[in-house]
Image 1 (spheres, rainbow, N blue to C red):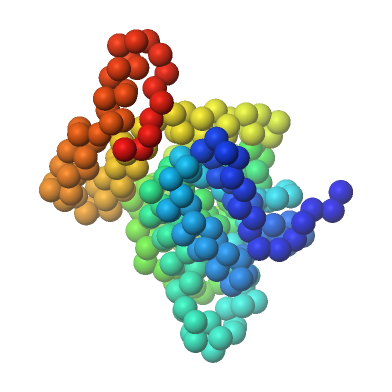
Image 2 (cartoon, one colour):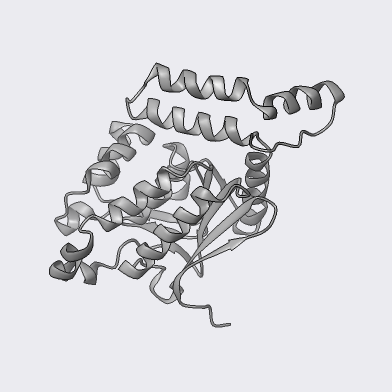
Length: 259
């Protein structure tokens, strides 16, 4: 069967789950500028779509993603004329999404894709996958927000290991160092992702979105008590809290509105 090739595809399932699939399987889903622009567009749509409760990001074929298409690094004039930090800004936009995000790692994760997955809130990997960040072997100094994400989410020791040694890391080791939240056989990957997506979508949107933003700010050293108190107050006065308490008392599942 020939898999489709082209920019990332966005699908909405009608039950609160959005899925973005990278679609260049022949080249391990490497990302071209047009792909990054498509991702930015998908992220913008998801950010303002109230029906979306969770996003799953995955790849087609045998790899998750091979990172940025290195051949385009040489096109300095065209990249500078548009957005010289396009990759960085795209990954940052993913991290900033209000809805929780899951990276469905169906295969290898290489180069900038390691940060793309790390920008998601959760990462579920299939057994046998590997990761490699080759920046040091290419002569690249990685962009600032990616370095900060590595250190804040994995710790300094793990970040130094992955960046400076540029070694290939096994799935088991990725689970040990905290890069993966779960590691399952390939045949169970979809079920594991679906279970986590269902659990995330079941939460009250105001609480889930607010706590995601607050936790990310704390991890980055941007703790701001008034902002956190504002989100706390918003949830305390919400219809979702009243529904959650009523559902708890009635021993039924809550039906949240996001208000």
